[in-house]
Image 1 (cartoon, rainbow, N blue to C red):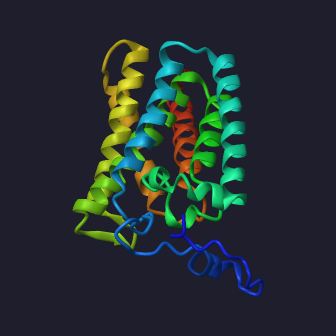
Image 2 (cartoon, helix red, strand yellow; image 1 turned 135 degrees about the vertical axis):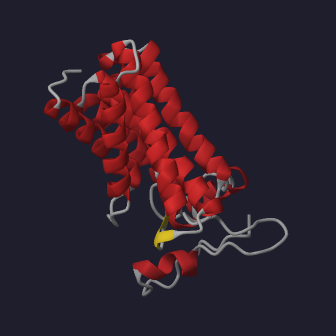
Length: 241
């Protein structure tokens, strides 16, 4: 694997220069440069959706609260260990690059990938919130984030911020609205005006929050903010889930 320069001879380089100076993917016929968050990277988005959707569905139909906490706690610990090995032994990680390049971004070569905060956020959501609320938070992370990214990157013509578009925001709102409506309606046994209203408020508030430039991984902010917001909305309406 001589396509990646993992040399660390120049110790005077600043941290901000390491990605460009020390891990340089050559643009040859064998490897293409790793994607960044501004690329479509469909395989990563689908992987994101599958993981979150699978976890939420397991919690919905099979695992109880205690089982999910133990299961996700174990997964989060294992992911952290694997990511530490990948980051600290780049020569070994390079051997897997033909496979991992579909889900790893260029900026994640020298740090843990987004899967670590993803697992931690899902675990914290399940620990903190009642089951219906936690399910909405996790399904929102699984669907709203990747779908809004795909729509925004591919069809986003009307920019709100450099990284957000009207089209992506609509996809984000619709995803959270439908997720909330489906879970709440299943919990109450019917689609009612109240579940429609709550779902619309939740989708609107979360979409506006997503426009705020926060320097925190959105894998952490989306499920926790969505769940906390829904909990407050339910409290205002006197609903106990």
